[in-house]
Image (cartoon, rainbow, N blue to C red; front, side, top):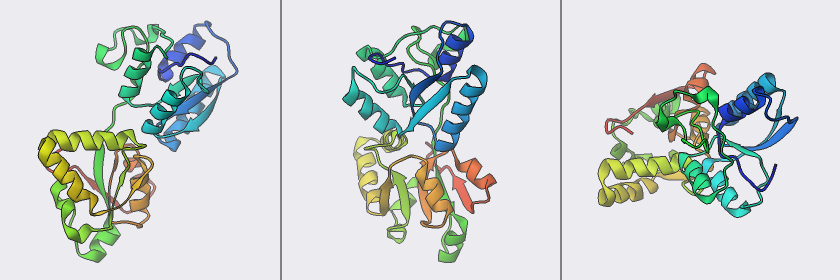
Length: 244
């Protein structure tokens, strides 16, 4: 099924298949949640429908860039996990195949497109994480404010994702501009940049790299933090006082 792109999430395809309106053995999907969650979603679809999901994992920004480059002849049938802006773009550009799912009847309108072009499966935010062993060894405390991250003592010890590839990073950038205003927000981002070791491809990568002790601090998606804590990573996390 190429040439039209279904910028929806999992619930829509469940309803199609379970209602007997479509028969397929496998689909190709661009999947933008974490690799762990992608695998769980693909397994869930397989268990419920018998459909195998051939997934390509990419960050939100990469998915949107790929869609723009491939339109109108897409190399996937579906996006499962993308930024809301990508869903809006797919509808506006006529890339999405609408499907009004009866399973979503009564769901508040903020969580789905009225014409069935996209459905929201999750909301997420971002947090500050630290490796507690390296933090203690350096004799530092967990920063209380985002602006504390501009202290020169953190130079080369902070990770965050790149807005060139990561939707999480664009959320961070928007948040800092919303918190501090355009002028002061950009000044903060420029000052923070001086302490960033490098920018990761995905929004979840800082969680793992900080958890392994490669860096002291990371600004990261909240998606995998609890899982890594459960796995025994020596992580601390917080939301600085300004919020997100």
